[in-house]
Image 1 (cartoon, rainbow, N blue to C red):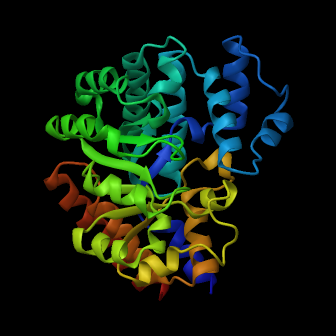
Image 2: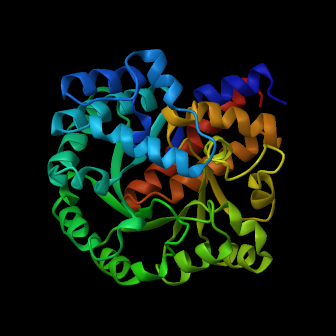
Length: 346
């Protein structure tokens, strides 16, 4: 039950966001302004029209809208603006650390300099850190539908951008027809370059996608991973390996990955001992925030303060930051959460 005390705990508790896309967190007003500024025609002319675009019946429609919206982001300063606005929003929600994904092929295909885009985002995040203390780092989420060959160029840019705060390597995009296995070599190279490895898997394709991501790619974090629930042996293996599922409940409903809150497997995954975290994915597209996702976790899955604290610590331990910084983050979250729970009696 979401009591006033538990709601206040959710609002004030320190948080970690591990699955959020830079492009998917753009504010509708910012999208309109950038489109106008950059001479990009959108299928909407006002704020109400833009907001209406963020309605989908399935995952395919979501991807189509997502790719269309990214056309308005064309310069390094656009990325700096997005990162700054997103970082401030996260800071206001007491997010003390976030790993934010950039979808490189959406920009490379339009002739953008990927390094310029990353540098712009890093500039925006650095400004947020100076002003609020909230730290945001970058992961590159390569669209698997473009095949493994083009990924090598992206990885080269990622290596050059590591000093700017690029810490993670991932594949995303459409799982259907694009299994993880062909990307094994690129993931091995990313591992050798000291990137944290994650992959979208088990969102709209079944357990075979998850098996491929953990066995062939060596991913230690999975975006979504909810279809793991369909294979009891896989659940045991996820627990044994300590693989973390970055779950985005509202996203799964909006894209049709699950049909209803009652059918969402988050609670079952958690009760099975799988390490899960709660995230917003594409806040603008899915009409949510990480704070709201925590509220919905209580309302729809019956989680309590113990559970929310455990999942936040799961996220802190699963970050791709250096070990000493990770230890410091975990200690901070543990101390602040304990004090807040004592204050509120939750």
